[in-house]
Image 1: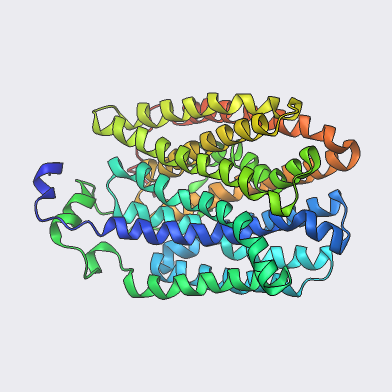
Image 2: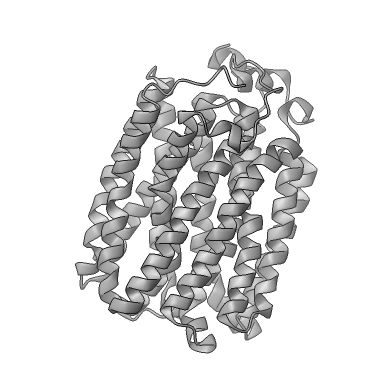
Length: 427
């Protein structure tokens, strides 16, 4: 069925679903980004070292890695409605528990709970997009909801000083962030069903969503069954060489600006908002470009890879950031790299649904995120160690490492999935 044929009388509730995913991702990143913003303040109040902060960051990532391995499997079996509900409910509780921490070890334990539960967001969201969108729209839809990660990062430096000023303590930041998740759950449970069971969707939109795809509802596979396929590793390694860089921006971006330029908590809003607004636009643009190329008749293989290659090239200048005495130049190149990452992310997530049937997409995404998060954990330990030993000069090493991962990743993806053909013989 053509676009014009099914547009007549077609509902468009799938975009409301994207809005739900966007707000869930916003809350998810608001919760996890709080530690990066509050780190300079908590470092003075709690008294942890750079190495201990590295342990706090890596504890979240280790738990997140373990959580994604389990989350994809659970979501593929519970379904997106109840799987997402479980994840958001648990991470809301975990966020509130941060308010009880008194030592770096207490924060590390709270981060473990947050990491385990927040791991469900992306496997559930990617599976939801696969259920609600045809392939030609998935990268754009993913870019839109993934923009919530940047909105969460934008809101954090704006709201944190206001919350502390209003309530007098950083503890309320974590408590109120937990309530955001509970608020979202109300709307999710009221509005969400798969398209075939939704009261808000007509048959024309269901036909448009299917777009000729065959039903793969009987296919259910665990991650250890999927690792024998090179396509699984194309997704996993495509994330492994890129995602640790994003974790670095999240957890050391504010600390870098504080140590290099003396930017304190009240001054962080403008540079961080600039970085993540531009990053948000990059994610939307990256998803839109590959989706537009497909609609223009280009193959999925060409459209995804050329967009990702362009993103990889835009990251390279970030290696120069520690050399600038100008905060404007530093923020500008970090923003460009963050935008390129979000463009990359919109497409690598979509590659999972390009290559695999809908009913195993969450499992593949969960496994890939586990691999990339373990890489992020190792990078956090490395950055913590280097900064502890070398001071601010250690940032030169960190930004240099951050600049080359994407080019390696696109080469690996092309080797493992040269034609980006969907798997149809899963057993």
